[in-house]
Image (tube, rainbow, N blue to C red):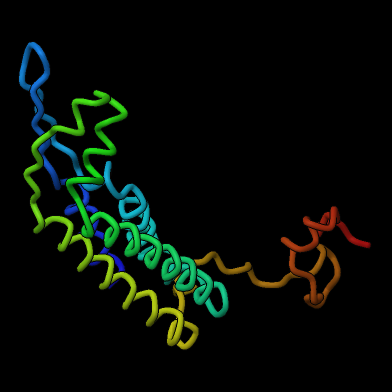
Length: 183
């Protein structure tokens, strides 16, 4: 859910949400305004959600819940950002464009594509649901397997000791001892 919702939100946020057209004294100006420009937090949330796909199975217990809580809080902030754009996308786009062209943005005609903000909102809702599941149930899931971790070599004693002593040569080396030398 985190990957699918994050991917959908990222895809939709990078599309054109509003096309602004204005006439200045010499030419007609047109600019495509993406969701990333109008609601930059939703792009960050989508990237964090996709990264959480790797982070969730990599950690266990309370760390996994922490990842879920961070993703959930950021997703809620992203939802507020997108809803703010949906309230009046043309005004938000004009405000964004006013920084670039000044007063010409106030008179700009806006052509709003509502489908992309709604798809972004849907993707963020899926991420919020997935993060909620991680918070509630994530500590009960298993983590990454230790199957491919390097095992310690068999325990051997120093040379000439006769019977095998309870010494791990790697631990002895870590302590600065030479496990091949007799005491």
